[in-house]
Image (cartoon, rainbow, N blue to C red; front, side, top):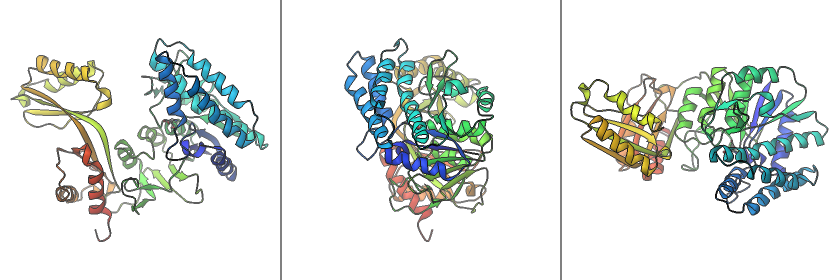
Length: 454
Ligand code: ASP
């Protein structure tokens, strides 16, 4: 059996959804279909999820969200009309959104999650109806009824591991095609919780693992995964045919938008290959993400760079001899609810790199003051505008000179390196640079590793 997930651009309008129906019907193995909310129809369009977030923001601010609700209702109405499935869809969507917007606002995060989730939920219902209108045996399945139980922060929920058993049971014997909304599940109290943005990938991966699918097909709008982001290097030709789970996880982490990084894990654990494919060109094989691949020694597979980090640099003379310094530092961050990403250290200094979105001005000041006071640090500085450049590839294992090449290419481009960190696995290394040089750095490394003659 195959679980297939269709991203926002694949369900952006009726014409795209017709492609989805055809792709699913072309292969009887495609039995579970996970959908995102309608995404952008063109560059200047707005994703339904973003419209829903703006409805939530307006409702929370006590402003009138009527126009924004109408815009979403019209979007679904147009899609339904294009698919020939009834003319009361816009009114039903409007009613549903009005009721979600009128719900309890005592927890803004939970309230916003419920609105965000409506995008996927309404889309799954529409797609199921579109199958049915074509005489296909298909039904919508809800995350609540099938046991997609989540916990954790609104907008960043995680699966409760026991869910796998319940999901497996829910899908143990079913007929026809099931259309399932991505991106959300439910907390123990029944409230809706969403995964991070792009989280429909996670839903698909979880379902593929739960039903032990033969493959998890992830349909999007690119022919394959490329060695670098084609928006930064439009001439990129290095299509990736196969990539390992850990390579993909590292590249996704560092900003490869094509597949959500958290989505790799459920499939990896269940050893289910993931196939990234193009809804607009389903005849192409796409990219396989799998346990292992044939490796070309000495060659990275991809380069990615993500911005939005800040670096907390702590200095204290004789830090290296102070037992428990690191634990106490991380305890401060823990008590402030800040998750750390990396922590390269020197003899009398340690850097803690965190995502800037987890820090606001007030929190930052408090953390700096606490580190100074509680750890008697000599100096604490927070630098912003930090980017992490990642070079990834199984072929880098035990192969000298790859980092040297990156360092030379960055030097030639006049880009200063602020940090270098290589994980124990040796399949990646990361380089800290200034965020405003991100694209230059990607281009420089692409030229160094992938241009002909290299
Ligand atoms: N619709 C959600 C988003 O835009 C989730 C997804 O598409 O995967 O982030």
